[in-house]
Image 1 (spheres, rainbow, N blue to C red):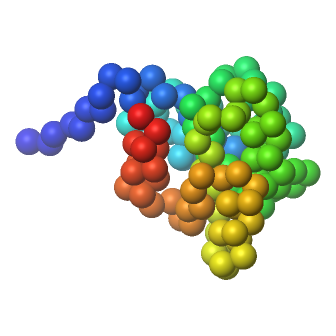
Image 2: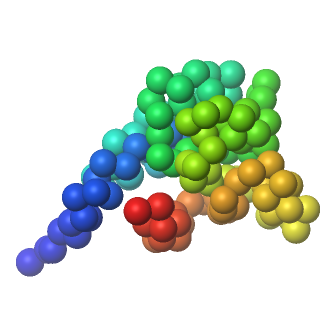
Length: 131
């Protein structure tokens, strides 16, 4: 018989904003998180990131780094400048795996730098640290 993992009530209320110009990637991550009980929104245009965050007021943002118009580093800095963005957790989810990429993420204000393809267990561990 299959068992279902139930998250604590307070965890289900967490809001997560996923921003990736790859629609399939953003939608897949968003769907996986919804199935875990989180409220999610996905955006595909980096220029919508701050406005989406302001309207949604997420607890966590998951950002791709390599995107047209604004990259994930720029978006992270812009979010951190917003009153609602100071205390939120921001996770980079990217294919960039050089040591300087990890440093750039930290300097931009990311809390974590995770590599694609997404390791759901690792992502959930970092999300769980928000509770």
